Length: 356
Image (cartoon, rainbow, N blue to C red):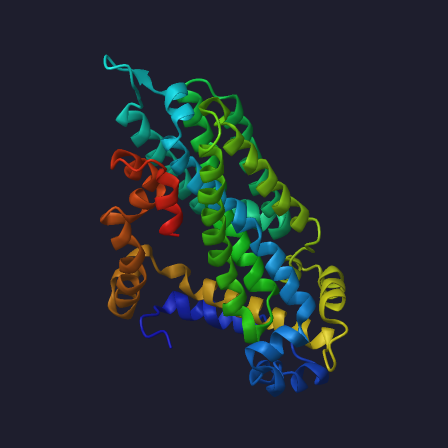
């Protein structure tokens, strides 16, 4: 399986195998290949959602966090087309019009993206330490902090600080919401439930266009009503968070068997034929496998991703999204209202609404 292993890596693999606790008779009957029942393997999407309705609902509630994510990201880019916003952060020109400095626009967008990468890069550690559930709450609190700063902003640097918090929360959300759903979702519908994150993100962006279209009809001085709407969206996400249990797998990784089984029993205990002990044993096997693989691969380096099959995987996973970034798709989407305003549309948010 690993043809490039050196002697030290093989020794690590043998050590992990040797030090593994012996299996008792019950464990032998629950060998890794038999831990997932055949009925679950062949279960269709609709049947899985109905059977594991409690776990599926929890995944939906977790995905609601992406609603505020998409709403705030699109809001920060589209709000720059509001006349009241331009007057607040723009400079008066000789012709009597207010114009926002393009450098300020560039800083707002670039800093948000930079700190989104920082959050995505550094978010795994606190998510592993605090837990998935509490990290989701931290994300919403940071988003609320960005909303407060936007509401009080009177200078372009204040808005720059809000973009710092906005980007950080977006990056951190990627490290906890997707992971939480992947750990809590039933096997047969895990992919579908994880796709809800993108669905809620897009729906949040759509709501931004609706909200800004409403604010556009009001007096220019009321542009901060658009900022206030973000508090409502974050509030919905926090209410949804209140119903989320901690990830049972996270407890399993930390050796908290009792707590993990309590959560599994609470979520899936009413499912006919569901065995908490078997499910927990499956988690243990998966965690043990990951630890084994990590021990084996410690002798490698990041340069391995540029070799052989890993290089092909890197290209396939890298190109689709980053090619969009390279040609400016995120910039066009984020500042679409600004571009529509420059094109002369009387209501640029109708154009933004049409492309969602």
